[in-house]
Image 1: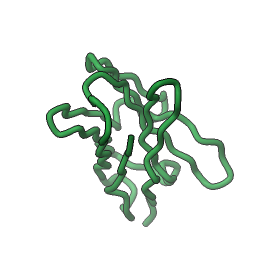
Image 2 (image 1 turned 180 degrees about the vertical axis):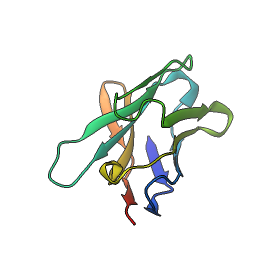
Image 3 (image 1 turned 30 degrees about the vertical axis):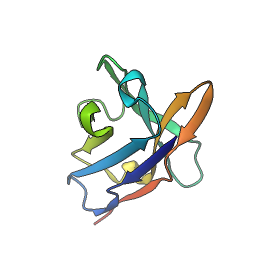
Image 4 (image 1 turned 90 degrees about the horizontal axis):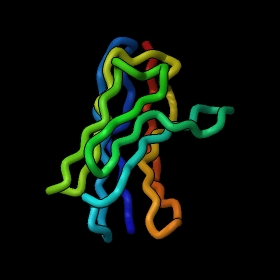
Length: 114
C-alpha cells in the first residue's frame, strides 16, 4: 500500500488550495480515507474523513471551509481547502487503515501567511 500526497504550498490568508492523495496497492473503493495535519509543536489531528460510501466528517475548525472528495476510478482523494487561515499552517497527511495497519502519505506542507 502506498499513499502519495501532494499539492501543498504557500498561500495568503483567505486563499484556497487543493491537496491530492494518490493510493496504490489496494482496491481503493473499499476504504475509508482521512486527512490529518500536524502543526509545529502540536499533535497530529484529524481534519476530514470520507468513508467508502462517501459519507464525510470534518473537524469543527474546518467545517464549511474544507471539503474532502474521493474519485474511486483514479484512486484519488482530495482536500479542497478555502478561506485558509494562518492557523491552518501544518503538514497534511492522508491516511487509511489496511488489514489493521495504519498507512500514511509522506506529508505535504501548507503554509498560510501574508
